[in-house]
Image (cartoon, rainbow, N blue to C red; front, top):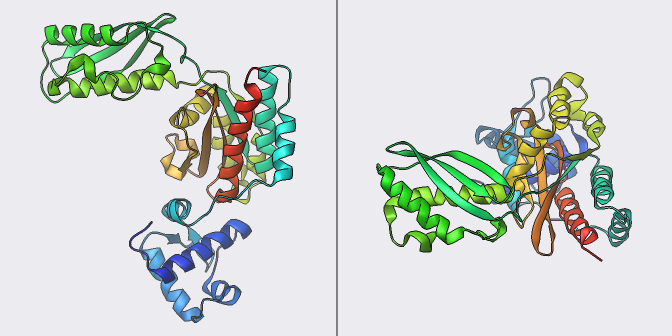
Length: 341
């Protein structure tokens, strides 16, 4: 909840966001006061809208007297104003029917096509890899007294993480001892079993090593939930149907990004492995191409283990309550459809 918003400002902001999502047109004070029973004059609404603009919740397009929400406004809206809508029973039944296929690959393709159809946005699905790999060794290679490279060897190969940095210098012999201690702790274990805090017992109370142990855990967990380079995309043309992207030059960066599997993987990776729907709005996305988009993703599971990520890419102006419900339901349904019969 935004602590700087009183009840009236919250009501007006929600009305403006709701109206803008519905119409894609800037919202003026007259429209707010006449369409909605706020019990205040249009002059009062205009004053409150000016205050909301100063506070960073609204902005005014150059060619309009109305206001539109900012990314900050959408974040407050998603976090504390909008309620998740229920997917109608008939739609739930239809979605489940579309996911019935003999082959897992076709099921995933159907899931992407269905999500694109029901949301009218671009849909992406990517399986995860690595969760069944077992760890053989872990090496901490000193780069300087305060930096080390983390290298993990699994039964399927080697992967490296970013450089780990720590406040106090650590001698090479101490890094070697730490490598051996961690390796003894996790050798032979599946990557999927490594959870936060798993390595604590390997180092006891050695606070000096805590930062590098945290980095090691992050590295292995990130690899556990890394998504494959096989990405299923559908509905890219839906981007051009949105008023925000009628200008092809504005849409081109988004369309180009969705055509590159490695870029889609990067877009999806932050949402992989979590048990909740993830919503990234505008510049919350890591890729510059997504700065005018919202990306909503959810992990789908098989046998209680993360199996992949499914999500949508659309403009920041969207019916979040509806779209979040659809993404969550598609993730649940896809996981069920992929379960062995």
